[in-house]
Image (cartoon, rainbow, N blue to C red; front, side, top):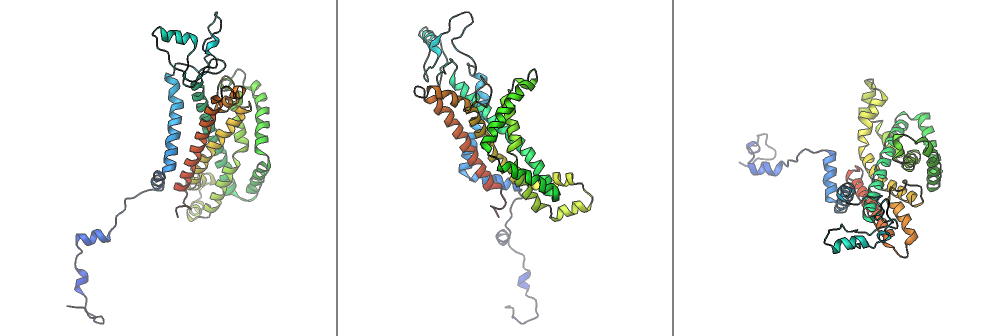
Length: 352
């Protein structure tokens, strides 16, 4: 019976159980997920960021694994044997060429491992020096970014949560550091710290690492935390008025506990993105300091020092400058593109 619009009688057709097809149409089930899983899914869909991540992983694994089985060392001078004259035929070999002694072994039927990128002016295999230089540059960039991350989170969270005079003083210090010329201060601090640390590290376990690398870490800790601290401070200023923070304060929770358990976890997207974009900046800074002679201690190579050494024979052996320059460009470009992909995937404001 057709139900009349003004009738008080109940329409029994409304109480007929729904069929399986109607249930499947009406109920659209979505599996439970988290913020991190959603971000990873968006990151995987970004082909440029995914390719950049693969390039970073390949370069990092190559820098770690290749020296394990490579027959030449980064400081091994081929052709130099104690008690014998130096074999100059090992010096300045072009790529995939052999010295006179190696060619004689090949003619005798022996196998000789090739020099993929040739040798430098001291007879050292250039390929393994590029690999070690990549390892050093990546390690310096990673650890320098960790230092910047720790100091930035600590200072920014204190300034943002406490506020008042503490925030005012910290932000004025940040403004002063921002006003300093970055490159000039980095060069001056690296020069002064290198001379000071040479005496302080003598006879200690850190002497092998070298005063230049330690000075690089100190420079990053003194100058490059300001951007991270400003980002964290801005995030915490917007989060500290949320209801869950007020509830924690009402229950008597301490400020340090609230910052660790509530505020910093909600800033994790900003932390991840900023750290990913800080690593290429640290690598580039280390490279140009090494290029100027303020980087890692010889004979340990870095990509910047390799490029600097190649300037002496640029007219004859230009590939020695091109190879480390390409590696630096590839690392920095891949990290920047991957950082942009992380920002697009994990920034809530961009996905709102």
